[in-house]
Length: 305
Image (cartoon, rainbow, N blue to C red; front, side, top):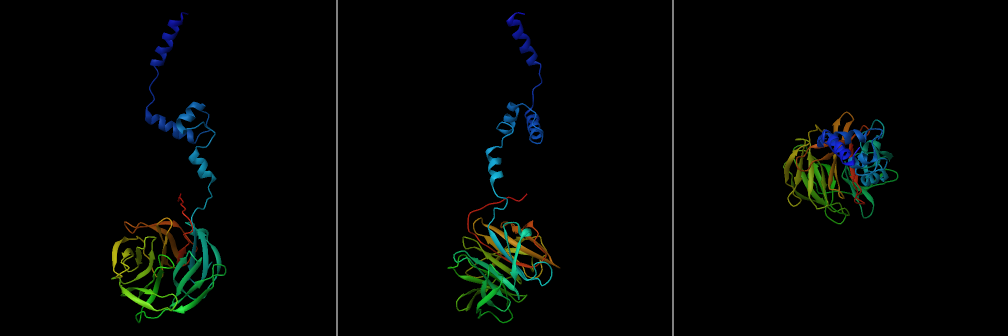
């Protein structure tokens, strides 16, 4: 057959082939990703950006990373029954459901904060004892008694930006909540002001020095003015929280975490949307009622499947 005629036949045949729409290409690529990859190499390369059988740079990097990428976090369970009762525990963010029990502690602690310079966990007890939680044994040793808070007020939270910046307490009597600064050496507390809410159950400060609080009378998140104590509503968490609660920033990522206790041992570990106040559950700890503290030792990130 004449060469020109043969070329004409091939071109005519090619012209009769149906065009493959972009959407169909995308669907085929999706199928390829979950197939036995019997398609020719050129097609796999078009779909995946590399020859099939090899990981893309992004996938290869993800495969090489450890499963747990978050900073070490400590949580104290003040419930007296069940697994991990009255114990200090630790886990890697955000996996509160896989916490390791360190050791028991008698008495309740209503505020935890981590000193990243000295590597110490500070806490405040229900009798206003300020001191350190041993990271090896879980034992709490008070070093000073906080004085100067109003009669009838109970401690609900502890927070500081850095160990050299002011130390803050939140307190409440069920009707009025207040913010104090206090001296960790002498224990003397100084009133900053009332929040304007009834049950500010915990406070946390981010790396920029902005304070936030969780009030369980309204089940909402607030920003708090550290100069006046006044709280400004951000929005509801969406969780019916009861009794003691914990919130804490991972200061390396800026994420606010919350230990939300609903009662009867039911709790959740969540992130808080700082624009809306909404809580998103990321893990389910052992049954208990928790306060917590993160250790912002490095810039790390993670993803939740």
